[in-house]
Structure formats: structure tokens, C-alpha cells
Length: 462
Image (cartoon, rainbow, N blue to C red; front, side, top):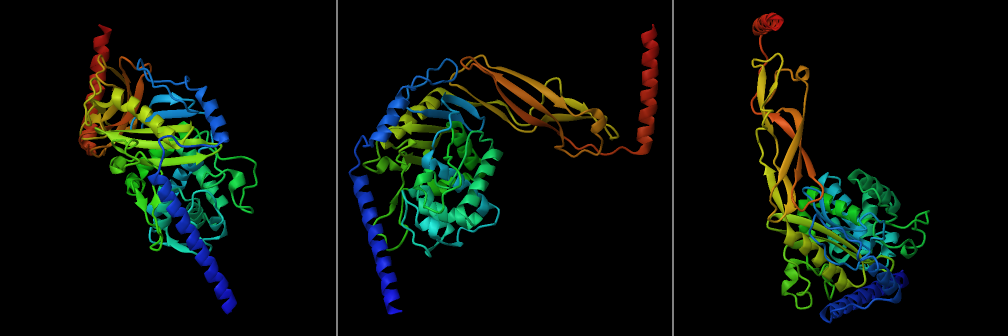
């Protein structure tokens, strides 16, 4: 018994020493960070291939996009869904740890739905303990809260923490992967396929836990932007995690986890990151493997406009951030979100709709929500057109509540400098309630309608 205890204590001691050594090395690396990172020959070969595609970039309208040396990129404004810049946006590529955005989304959903609590304890299993790459050296049997593991995943891109969370949600990582792929389909991520929760290549997963497929995880830049957009929409508190600059995972750790996102605005005060810090940037996720190169899904907000950028296949860590800055600058320097229709707007020519069996025969209607489009700064000659789809009068039967939906209106916005019109559909709703009319009122209305139609018919004869 004593021998077993001694063996376990020795193992724990070795793990703690390894953790300390790795974190100290990590801090030394960060403090001595070079301007241009080194990369192995496989990444160099990859980057050379990326550079040959740098001219395949599409901007918006007549505004010229920047030159980019990447395999793929995209820039979107999430509230309108407008794509401002794209470069091979639908090419499925290895996303590396940007995969973890889906794991983050699902875990946050579990908490939102009450299926998990941030304070719940998670027991580390064999699969997580054997994960390689970015990790916090979890040992089998360790226990940490959901929140602690989530921070390790979001900030330090820890593969072992990610797998532990996946197994806590679904029992096994592969069952969690099924949930990831189902969620991707629901989001409209058409060219994405996951084989694990982390973004590791199949061959780098622990033996015995690799999927029964020779496929690898792939994601397009467009799909990555879609995923980030859903995180922002459904979990607007994401910045509670993504803006953490460093995090001490264990009280005994000699050094904290350092956020791989060098572009955080708060890094403007950090010597080695100051040149990368980007005003308004508060997320989202980096990624790197030899096959993927260096990737980054970033998001920033300025003057009330948020943009999401994705770059894939940069040739170094610094390069993925300098390329992201180019992409975001293109958006913030040249575009703005403009409200073209205010909420509760009366639509000319469709001010009222008929109602049957009510105290009134018609009811005023307005747009339910505001309509905004993203346009070039200083754009002139806006051309806004619309089409309506009104519910048939026979289906609009009193009683009707105030704010009842009676149809939709689709606006199309076309302005100089934008090749294609943008569209947005909003509901048309009633401004007042319409009560049900009594039988006596309905009788006299029917008589009036009868004679009105009769006299009109006689009039038409002459």
C-alpha cells in the first residue's frame, strides 16, 4: 500500500514539475517574442502555396481590397450578413483550434439551457489526459469546474480541457462530435466536418480514441464566420472569457496561461503585444497546426459596427494577426451600418389592411423593426425598393391584438459602389387592436355592402 502511494505521489510530483517547466518556458517565449515567428518546413511549403493565391480576393463594389498572402479569408458584418471581402471563402481547409469555437458554443448552450452549471465539477478521463499539443497537463481523475476548463480552452486553447468538457456533455468525445456536426448543419455551415472537439489532426489524437474514419476536420472561412456570428448572437457574454489576457489555472502553478490572441485591445499596454493590439477587438479564436498553418477568427467593434474576420493559412503567428488587421481595416475604413428604415414606419401605399368580422373594417399597420444595411462611407444616391406580402383579408379575422403580424415587407438597398443589392425582410404589424364586431353590426354591414355593390353594378351599366 505504501509503495503504491509512493508511486502515485512520485507521478503527481513529476506532472507538477512538467507543468511548471512548460509554463515558465511559455512565459520566457512570450517575453522574448520575435517580430517574425519561426515555422517548420511543412508550414513554409504551405505558405508558399498560399501566397500564389493572394490575388484571388473579392472586395465590395468599387473599393479595392488589400493584398493578402493567405489560403482563405472573409470579412462579414454580422447584423446584415453582408460579405465585405472574400478570398476562397468556401474552400474546406483544416481550421486547427478554431474548431474549439463549436465546442465553446455547445458548452455555453448547455449552461444557458440549465443542463450544466459553470460550477459543476468535471472529472478528467483517459482521453483528455492523453491529449497532446496545447494543454494544461490534466491527469486522469483530476477534477475542475466547467468554468475553469472553459477558460483554459478559450484562453489557452487547451486540448485536454476541451476533451474533458466534450466528454462531460456527451459521455464520449465522438458522441459530442455528432452534436457538433448536427449543430453546424443547423447553423447553415455547409462545408464543415468535425472529427473531434479540438481541431487536432486525426493522427495526433490519443490511440484508442481516434474516429473510425480517415477524414479530417475541415471548415471554410465562411463557415467559421457563421459560427462566430452565432456565438455573438446567442452568447453575447462571450467576452467574459475571450478578453482574459492571462489565467492561473491552479493555485500552485508558477506561471499563468497566456491568451494566444495577441490582438486584444487590452494588449496595447503589453510590451511584446503592443504592435498587434487592435482597437475594439475582443475575440475570438486562434488555431495552428502544420497542416492548417496559422488561422484566426477575429471580431472587433467600432462606432457601433461589429465586424468578423477569418484568415486561414498564414505562414506565422505574427502574420495571421497583421493580415487580420488588413482585413478589419478594410472594413472599418470604408464601410458603415446605415439605418434606412426606422422601426414603426408607415409604408406608403400599404397604410392599412382589411379586417373581417371586426368593429373596424381595416387596421393601420407599420414595420415591426428597423432595417439597416452596410454601405460605403459617404455613399450617395441610395435606392431603396420594397415588396410586400400581406395576409389575405379572409384570414385576418377579428379579434386582432395590437402588434399582430399581418404580413412581411422585403427591402432591397442599392447604392453606388455596391454591385449587388442587399435585402432584409421584416414583419408588418398592427398599430391598434381590433375587437370582434357584434352580430347586429355585422348584419347592417352586410346589408350596406349588398346595396353598395348593387348600386355600383347599376352605375356601371350606364
